[in-house]
Structures are given as C-alpha cells and as structure tokens.
Amino acid sequence: MFRTTTKLMMALKTLSAKNAAELDKELMSSGAFSIDQLMELAGLSVSQAVYKLHPLSKGKRILVACGPGNNGGDGLVAARHLHHYGYEPTIYFPKQSKNELYARLRKQLEDLSVPFTNDFDAALGASDLIVDAIFGFSFSGEVREPFPRVIEALRDTKVPVLAVDAPSSWDIESGPPKDGPGKGFMPGALISLTAPKPLVKHFRGRHFLGGRFLSASVAEKYGLDIPPYQGIDQVVEVPVDGQKL
Image 1 (cartoon, rainbow, N blue to C red):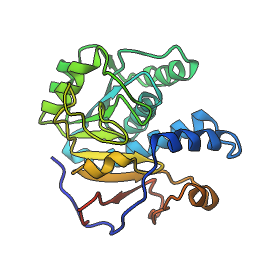
Image 2 (cartoon, rainbow, N blue to C red; image 1 turned 180 degrees about the horizontal axis):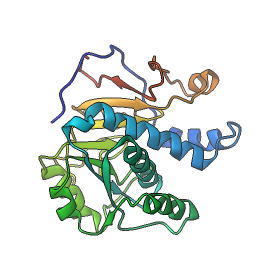
Image 3 (cartoon, rainbow, N blue to C red; image 1 turned 90 degrees about the horizontal axis):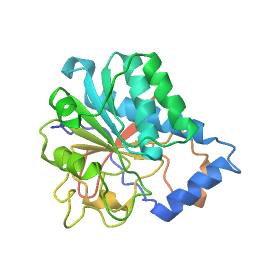
Image 4 (cartoon, rainbow, N blue to C red; image 1 turned 120 degrees about the vertical axis):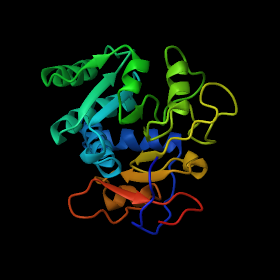
C-alpha cells in the first residue's frame, strides 16, 4: 500500500457535514465561486494527490469510480487532469446525473478518448490505483445498487485506493459502518477537500488536504486551519489522530 513519508507536523480542525454544506453555499453566494469552479479545484487537488502517492513510474492505469453526486464530479475532473499528466484513466460511472454539468464533464473526457466502463471487476483487475469518488460528505443512509459490490471490491482489493473526502459508505461524523458492504473498508489514502471531516479520527492511512482557495476570513468564521501549502501545490500531506509525519 502507501508508505508514510515525513512531510508536516500539524493537526487540523474538522468540519461537520452540516457546516461543510453551509460553507459550500457561502462560497457560491458571497464568495462568488461557481459549482464548476469548486469542482475544478477539488478535482485538481485529487489529481495532485494521485501524483504524489503514485507517480507515473509506479504505473499509469488509474480506475476512477464515480458516484452520481458532486464527489463523482470531482472524480471526473481529476481523471481529465490525470490524462494530461500522462496517466491512463478509466472511468466507472454507472449512475450519471442528468445535470448538464456532469454531461459536460463526461464529454470532455470522451473528447480525450478516456474510456468509460460498466465492468468494474475487469477494470479493477487492470488498474494500478483506484480513486474512490463514489460518496462524499453528503452521503447518509443505505448504500444502493450497484455500489454495494463495488465498495466490497474496494475493501478486498490489494490495489491501492485513494478515497475522495470520505471512504465510500463511511458516516461523515462517526466513520466506518459496523455492518454492510463498507464494514472493514480502510483505504490506503484519503484526500479531504476544504477541511477534514470528523470521520478522519478513524482513518489510519496517508491523509492529504486540498482546498487552497479559502480566504482567511472564511477560514476564521468556520474555525478552520489553512496549512502551509508549498509552491504551486494544491495539496498538502497532514497527519491523522495519533500519527506523526
């Protein structure tokens, strides 16, 4: 799986699902961001986390598993950037939203000849790394088809997994489920977007933060830390509870 490297010593404050939703609304109102911009920034951060975890020399084949919501959109954007970095992404996107934004993101990938697949198991077997962009901070309730078997496969695979904002099926506040397809699912890496969510206290892999666009005033309002991003990086590696980097 992923090897922890010495990067940064800091502990970040977390952002609840309710506050994360409120922050997104504020960014799109008084902050003057569009949903397209926020998704582009999130997807760019995800792509950079992949690059740091799994450089091209380790293998180019990236499977991006996308859900029907914003988390899936972040995955689609990340796949476009990964293609331009030189990776060979494949997209699993079984429940596409009817929203025009997702249709445009798919069209952008199709124009680059990035393949879409309905055969998750075959794609998993031919991948060097998986991006879990199925469910994000707004997930709650039951995992519905076709995702239970996908999450079970993510749990059981030996292929490294990077989860976007949350390991899919985890509760944002309380972490991994006690039963169901996500029981025992612990991906090797997680990228938190904007700020870590409370579930991070249960996570034991490598942890990245992406969100290099918050103003100091917004961060202060929500009690968030802005970590010291380096150079042109859109991500920074940070510890989880009980972990030193």
